Amino acid sequence: MMSKVVPNQLKSLSVPLIKEKKNKNEKIVMVTAYDYPSANIGDESGVDIILVGDSLGMVIQGNEDTLSVTLSEIIYHTKMVSKAVRRALVVADMPFLSYHTGVKEAIKNCGMCIKEGRAQAVKLEGGRKRADLIKRIVDSEIPVMGHIGLTPQSIHKLGGFKVQGKDKSSADRLIEDAVALEKADVFSIVLECIPAEVSEIITKEVKVPTIGIGSGPYCDGQVLVFHDLLGISDDPLPRFVKKYKNLRKEITEGISSFANEVKKGTFPKDENCYHIVDTLNKESAK
Picture 1 (cartoon, one colour):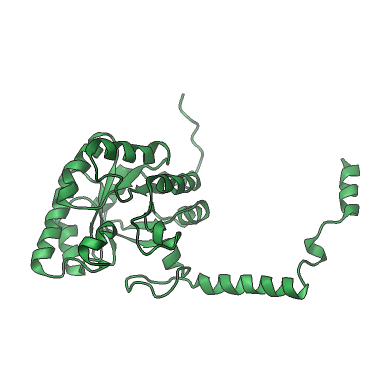
Picture 2 (picture 1 turned 90 degrees about the vertical axis):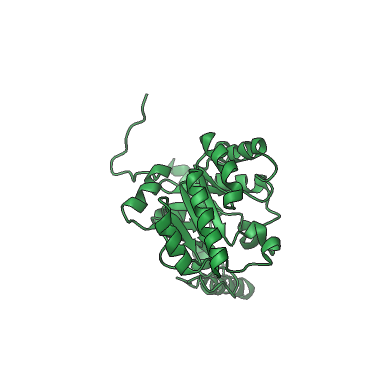
């Protein structure tokens, strides 16, 4: 039996609908979020995709990189995000070593993010060297978002968080990576810290949407971390981040005001309290 359609309900975004946006020249908005309230706000704000990123290792856990994030942690955060979202597509970021040790384990781990985390797709880092694996995962009915350029799980190999594709040979390799991912049937590709000129070529070359972060204006969409774009994260932030609000300052001022009032004894006031007489009156009115 089909569920009843709620009038004026927003249409949930699916993988095919995300892919169609490129053909319609509609820009894609993606936000990286890690919990129920952040995802709920993002969804209500009209973003298209919410990524539960392994960047939670840095943003939430305070680590220097993403490498220590576990699969169980990604599933835990994805569960919270999925509960909050009514419209946006939820994508779980596969953490380091969750897809590096064999096809069977990779498919199982990706499937766990769909089955337990309630994500609708997963994201994997890497280009040509991951193409065969990604094709196997997609063939297992799990949609995959690709990710090339600066891939944070490869920072030791890359020598740090550095822009990729700055010369012709490395730019050509990135273009080849993108084409290989398209052939592997990814539904979109994240381009991270790639020169704008290279991102423009990739975006024209592939038929699937590209989503940029630090990769210029020519991508089919853009992604920023919830805490970065709202000014909650510590400074300094990467140059590609734009702060649309400075909530860190406002939050600090709010908590400082609360602390000062508690210390002075001016909070709570009478209007913030309950009294036994009110309680008795309510009980007698029942």
